[in-house]
Image (cartoon, rainbow, N blue to C red; front, side, top):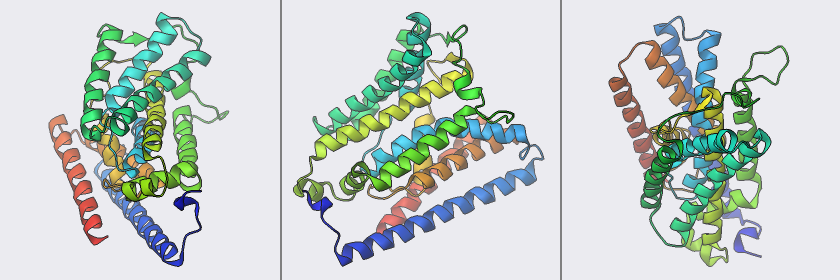
Length: 333
């Protein structure tokens, strides 16, 4: 039995309650920000609150949110993953390779593409935990490797899923009879619920928080931190693979250069939702709210015909505010 398996004493319980209250307040603050931003764009454009536009926002949230849910585990554990965007593009390409070039049926090709994302995460975890390479450097290198491999394997051209029966419906179809509600949104809600349970109700979640809070103390308590770190990165990699499948199914093609920029948006979503870049604190619900904020911002700025250059400036400022807010939270304990 490890120290983390022992019953918590009274001071630990009080600290846990305080942390939970702070987490709820951060979620409320993020939700309030989402409401304010949505209200602003709804006043600025009558098109914002139409059904078609809301569906477009949800579709955008699916990709950012799927990447962000996995990244939440990595950041809570005190790490970072810069390879999630290009890794997603590589997994989309691998889905094309499995289904179009090799000819596997979707029942085999889709899980294979998702597992390939887990392999990317596994390599990241081994580089960080076994070789002691700083996460920023290890995943930056993987970002370049994934980008290059996606271009090489696709021949720098899209792979179209024409003729692969049922693949596009993974994202755009609707499981609910008579209701035009995209499957991709249901997938995001399902994996978010599952990830939330894993983070709050299982050993994986408990050790993830513990490693991010104090890695040395966790190791001294008898936990094999290196093994769990590898597992956390590999687990997060599965979300990279799933995001690759969802975005390629939505587009009907695997675009080798489609992932650039998603890493920053996903990390921003995680931080906006209250997860600390220093590790040890965060929630899946907060991450979903953060992903919605990023999607609403992207969508609203496009509706208002803000030039792409200025959209990048505004998104960059939002990320800076999120990081600065996290620094202030850390200073206040």
